[in-house]
Length: 134
View 1 (cartoon, rainbow, N blue to C red):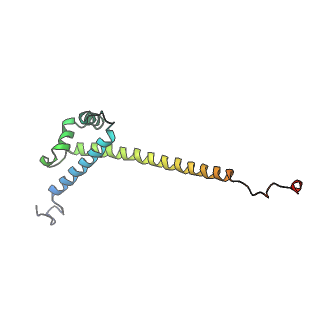
View 2: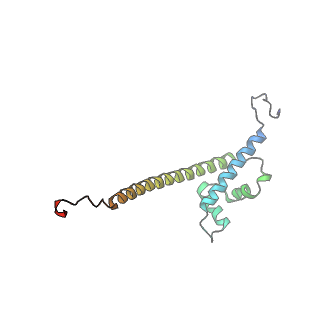
View 3: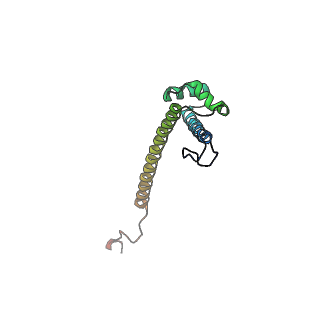
């Protein structure tokens, strides 16, 4: 390797830096998925990690290692990286659809509130008083 210079194969960045980027990305996705999977006060980390392992197909021991022993890892397995990426992308898609539905609901609610406010508005006293009031 030639450091950050372009190597014989045309790579500009060393492979060590690339694997550390992939490892940190995977660790970030894993942390976000763990937070999303957490169900509350009585939920234990091992149970959450087990559910996430079942959903992604990554062994629980590998997820534990990714969380606590990242400094010992030089890179991440391609299958684990891909599984975490796909699970995170699916989670982001669900969040996006939920936010869009909430925005639509909020807009409808404000439109109804505005229509209701104009219907409740009091009319002027002169309106509706015909010849009989004179």
